[in-house]
Length: 97
Image 1 (cartoon, rainbow, N blue to C red):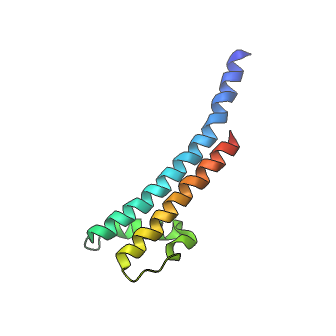
Image 2: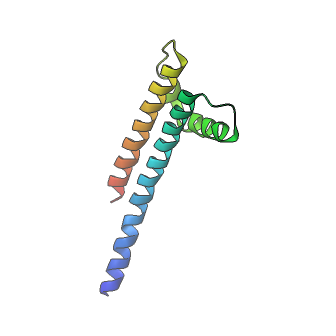
């Protein structure tokens, strides 16, 4: 009976950990997008994939601020989006515990 309790306890940790991991990967996509924009690489497959995923995951945060400089625009908006995802997934993981 004791091992069943451990098994359900492990299962209870999996979902919050998965939600946290999802938030970290989403924030990582945002940070990678910022770094790729700052380094201005030639258009390649990595840049295209990261750009598309980051744009999709940025939701409405991608156009929140509109400074005149495009690099500042991307940096500011995508940092806000990364922080948003980290906070939201952390709260959801806490609720799931």
